[in-house]
Length: 336
Image (cartoon, rainbow, N blue to C red):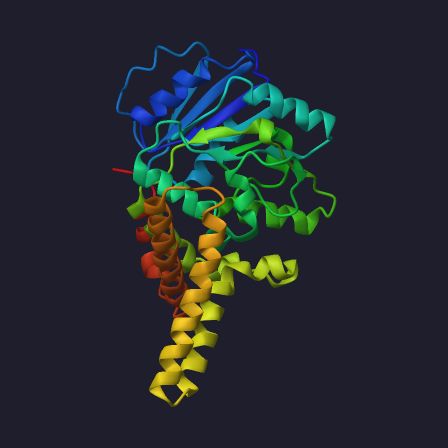
């Protein structure tokens, strides 16, 4: 059988409604020389005969997304591979635009923003606005908007990236020990070997990605906190230290609070810090949201998410993450 030009790899637990919706949307791509590899924990025998392209289905058992992506990339021969999540779907020009950017910019990897579904639920949209905040995603918040094209000096989310299959395999794929932030580890590892790595973030390569519910978003922030040590990189300058900012800030404030002897000074200090932080969040939020109720809920959610990230960081520092990290991650994964 002739190899397709692009192999779109989708890891999933099984064939659910979200994956079927994604597969239906792939019918609309205006690029025809592609196939899809779905890599599952188990096969529930759902009918996917509605697809107008070739689909390869692989059953791997309880493996993480890194292992599933690596398996499909090795198993199916193609010139290019594209990663997309089962709870996402692309517009019709997604592949065509991505391949064009990859060739014209002589890039190693191309990716783009993931923006929410048009019919997202209210609490899922709150999650999205939280992730657009610098106070949640730091300098990476640009990946949640249709911003300008740029050369990416850090890393792109693996829910939306395109590259040559040979490039991926020659760099040993993704770390199968990682249950999350496998994409960050992938790019960091390659950059250490290849200082000329060229990664392009292009708004023309955007896709729609279903947001987590607010509760799942909170679990996600907690799980990211448990990966504090892995996420912090001292050789990348200030950007590499951003994941540690919440816990470092908290520890500094706690130390100052402890040494203040007067209870009134303690109260004034704590109140001032909280007010300043929330004014900054408010100024940022009103640029994107006009509803007073939504603004209030977003600010409240950012505060809670930050507390949970600090809690997760404490779990990491105390070396308790090996007992809790995977369980917290699984709780954050879907909206069931």
